[in-house]
Length: 342
Image (cartoon, rainbow, N blue to C red; front, side):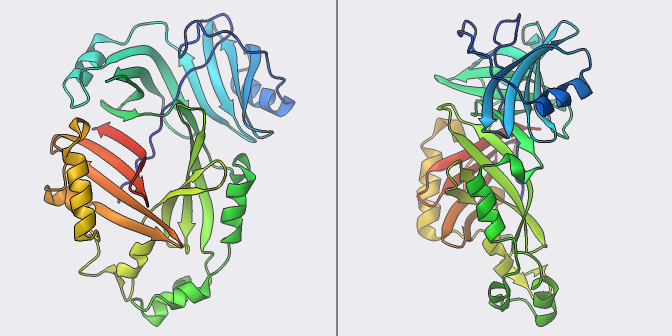
């Protein structure tokens, strides 16, 4: 199962430069930055000047700031131990070649603006632009000759659980221990396979991508190690509410020794669910050509379950190297989506 953890970002006001995301926005009072945050900037950019705190993304943990270096304006999100995301002004319009490439895709018809360079934690540099389509604002990232489209204001990636809200840390900590009762309920596995995972912690934090939504709220796509066997995502709101879960229930589809059984890899949607989502996709021009009548798409559609949480995942292709990855909550509401062309 593919989990495209590609997320949007917006460049905020930079000292001496126009704000790339909101031209003309009135500057906010400068926020005092902890010395540890300043030190992380100076370690990577010894010549940095005009450091200006913009906001506490996570109170007392993660900060957003702007600075200048070698006549270039930067916007950074800095956590407890790393620069988590960096954006730099480019000072030029979106290249014609990139404009033309977007207009050849199913997401064509919008307007590109605010071209900039982005760097996420442990990722290669990429270029991005704002994209307005049908009255909605998106962010497009151009990577390796392809493109991704997301609807989030800005975001960052962290490998430190301490950068997350306490309620999310507590949720994972409460399950960061073995769960022998659950493992012993996996009667599809043989005894040797159950013993292999029975002493592993149920959940262990791996990484999190934080998305700032258009209304200013945040979502946390947390990757966890499940029973020491596989990595799966859980999407949280900032108050700790679970919005969506990955395919934790698929562990019950393995045969004996973690080999895929006859049902592994096939959709587990009911006929009622299939009809609902087929009609939903058919009614949306956005998903034209991305439908469940396609055999590959149907077999990439799942109902996910973990504890009392339910979610739906659709990994849909139109056969032209374009793909939508869609996550719906238990009420069948779309809570996360990415488009990619590769």
